[in-house]
Image (cartoon, rainbow, N blue to C red; front, side):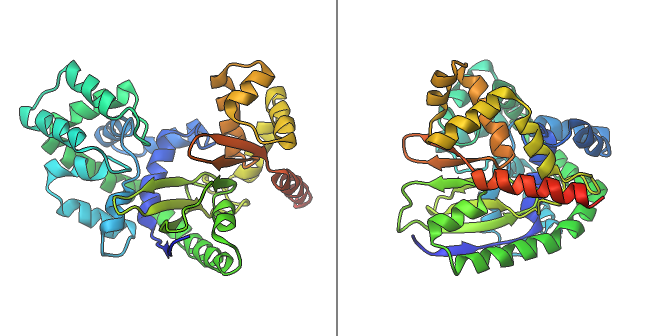
Length: 346
């Protein structure tokens, strides 16, 4: 495996937290609590971000290019230094995109309007992109690009507003956790081979085969736990945001019991998911193989696997051709210990 690089900064969580707050169910967050945070924003900023996060994500490629501290306030200053019409193009994409995509969006910006064929062209160009785009997201995208200057100004204002009403205080809460998580991860790197290190830091994701010459950049994140966010830069470096939120912590400050424990118990309260864990304890299976054995629709199985993954109860092995899942028995044992510890703590 090639050189391992480390980066850290609260700016990554500035953007991760916005993604989570706009997709709370995917990340196991109570929708009502997430909506409460969003309600603290002024209406124009809240409505803009709700539309923006139909397609926008975590601008890892751009953040990796910055040579200044990667704290939230410094990055917001860097965004303010961008020309308003360029802010969307700079921040919206989580991975490098085809030049044809940028050209299509630039034409929409110059024209100041969009047509249905623009949406269809972008849909075709982005079909195999690692970043997911829905029809609603693409329509929101072209609408914003047709008013690129105004959208760029609103994007900065909305991010500044979010920082002021919520993330500034959150930043202070998570900064020491990020530092501790980075330190612990670097300690692990001294004793674990790269495949095992990535599997531990990602809470159960294994990449096969691992290119011996691949360069990796590992970035701790509080808000993405227990999932990971990974993207490949134009340089070829694979960036992985790995979760460092302790199991006893919750995205909702002061929430009791711990969120990780609640998600684990909720994931087990379903007969189909218990059957999935039993099958996967026997042998690794793809989602299609599980669907066949369980006689369930593939989308249903994928939904169950997502919840089990969110609870940290399944391991994923990612190869060039498929993804195979297995049960993380050690996580089941850890869940039992956490449950006993929580109950006795009262």
